[in-house]
Image (cartoon, rainbow, N blue to C red; front, side, top):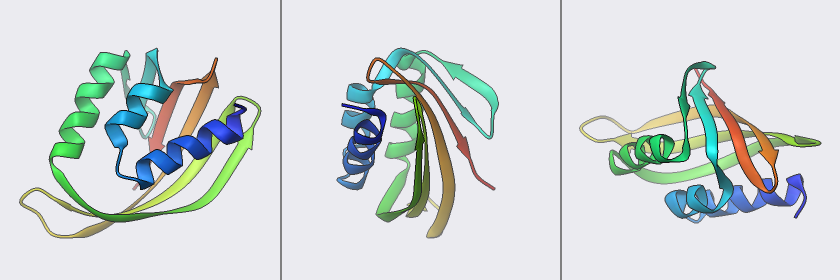
Length: 114
């Protein structure tokens, strides 16, 4: 699959509610992830734990995808999530996920949000 097809597969997995399964399939062992480009988390195990904590502490009501940009081994996806954090109020969260791909896996992903 090319980067556009891989990006679509990740989007489809998340939209189907298979966030952790999608992570397991499309993220590299050496993946580096960050929020707003700071405090990078290194390694698949560390990042999976972070994803598990997120998934287990929110109720998802839905998501939409805006613009999707692909350039070589890089992609960016504009997301809008409708969710309720555990013990909190329902919110709309907007973010852009910028990804770097290598050998069919995400090796870097930075989430940008307000």
